[in-house]
Image 1 (cartoon, rainbow, N blue to C red):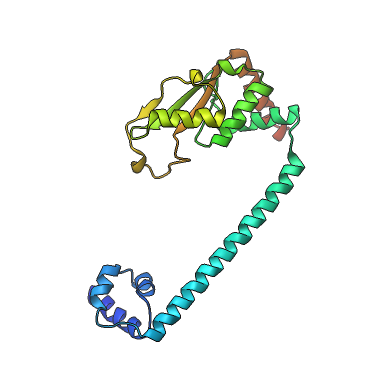
Image 2 (spheres, one colour):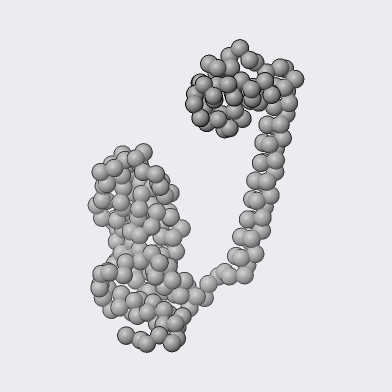
Length: 224
């Protein structure tokens, strides 16, 4: 739409009592441009009151819906926690296998490792490694992938606290050349954390367990 046509339509919409936001959404024109075009077309006090009342109703509705959602999620959380937890040893092992299937390193023949930005994923991974795989905590190494504008000591302290693991388990972090401000998807804001240990036999067992489960889902497939 030509600028003149937009100007004309903006005036028409303003005379109909439309707010800047409503006109902006309809015509895709910046507020600064509308301020220039419509500076001599203020809304009446009655119309301003109507808009404020409508906005308050919208905000109240949003707050009500948010509260309902929070209550609903809290109810689901409580029910699922009662239904599924605590995990048995077998369930914990299987949960870790499925997590590893999705997030773990499957390329190396000897490194058992999981990388993620979500502290809860890594907390469960650590539980799985120590409880199900019987890996001593001291043998699990931690490496962080951080952006160059992140505070190394601060982020290390964050993961030490979240994972309840010693700083001595941490290696030197990998520092990316980009900044957090240059990244669209920033995860949880504390870089990527990798838990790893070297154990060839254990890695082979994990991979073969994943393979067996895959064949279970496709029983007619010829095993290789």
